[in-house]
Length: 125
Image 1 (cartoon, rainbow, N blue to C red):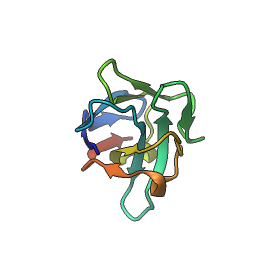
Image 2 (cartoon, rainbow, N blue to C red; image 1 turned 135 degrees about the vertical axis):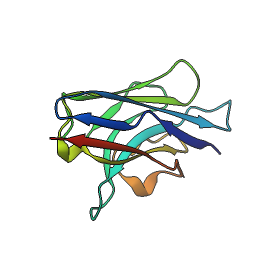
Image 3 (spheres, helix red, strand yellow; image 1 turned 90 degrees about the vertical axis):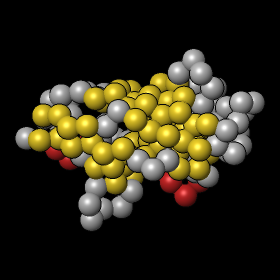
């Protein structure tokens, strides 16, 4: 069992960059599949990026490919999201999530077991 904790949100102008961080506390033994999700007001939560426990498999939503990069840190169950060329439609609350087991379900929110409280990203035009 882990508890993800996000940081790094903020406000940028269109075209700017932000780096989100997530550390999932609580399990020093297992590597979890970890993902980033976002939710804008009035919209459903959507998968943005995910990376498998071993770091070998990644998932990206089509809308962020080529602009966002997910990576794992050296510390167990840490996750980063480097966001570049940000657009107003990237704004929302970004959540970090962790999935138990050997599978990594990419952008399927229902498959993730543990969620952080989220960090806000605002992009002004």
